[in-house]
Image (cartoon, rainbow, N blue to C red; front, top):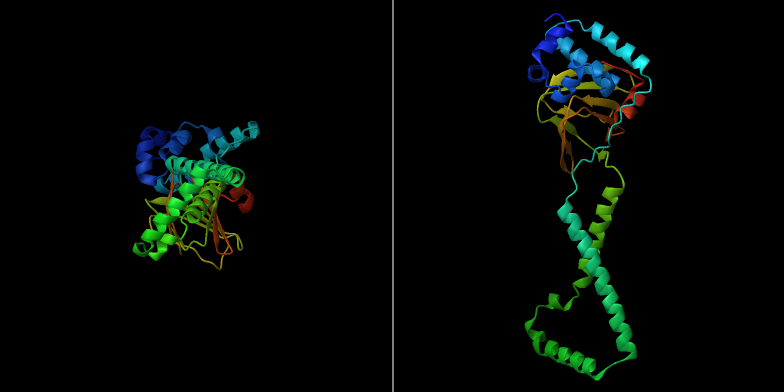
Length: 268
């Protein structure tokens, strides 16, 4: 291995097996699709390839810089990532529950108004019959059955509805008080100490233990990760590069633009 062309001859699949960089990203790199790669991604991937294969890729770096200078209007957009996919079935149940509650409230209001204005003889007789049946079976029923169950059901449905609406109106990026990040498979990791500016990188499948005393930026070659928190484990299944900021003991998933802003353009 001496040149970039040698890497192209190997192909994305062989390079992926050696470096664990996502195949889609390797295809972009090998095809010189510079407009589809951020500077952080491109330089990070090139560094990994140089280290793994012991070659000098300064030429392709120069080509990338020249391309970006000539195409300053190129903007790479990153879609915000939802940590967990929405359940359409659950949404349907929530919407159905809200509709049912609304209908019941409307019917109840109509019936109340009708009873207060037109207390017909049939309604009075029906109400009396119901009271008599309850009185006859009162000794046979558990005490808990005397309590109303309509209100808890309504409150539960409304609470779930609020939670679903909150999820759909804003992106979930704050992960919270995480303890460690464990790759599901081997991955390249770049680490930058925001206080000292010290940076490091490695390829590993071992958990990354987060230090609460430090404010740190993390970059992962892919997002197939387990975020371990005191409340449990959150699973991410992103095949592309992901970025995190860990500040004041709180882990937050950020996009490429925020990452570049926080690290002042630092690359590996």
